[in-house]
View 1 (cartoon, rainbow, N blue to C red):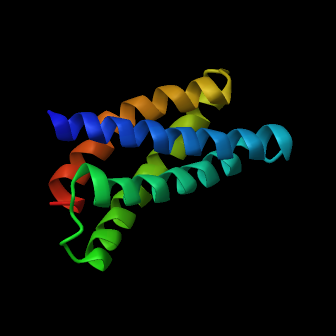
View 2: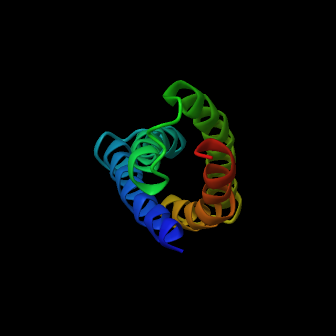
Length: 123
């Protein structure tokens, strides 16, 4: 249970970084929301990998390059799913991209990221 709680705390911080980058790119620099979303996801992913390796799963004794390769594999799937779902929900349901991003982040954070990080990346 402690690992799950630490993973959620790491996800919250990574999500904060993700949203901050996204909002700055879209609202301040007027970038397309899909580009802002993808860039934010990259920034959040780097944050999440570092926290997952060092703090959540305490996997510093494992080979970093192998973890990074597995993380990138999982992360690429996440970026593809996340960006596609944010676009589809925003475009077709006609909702604000931030609302779409929040909904998709929660869904994939628990159902996709946590499961794959625990059982594949940092195992």
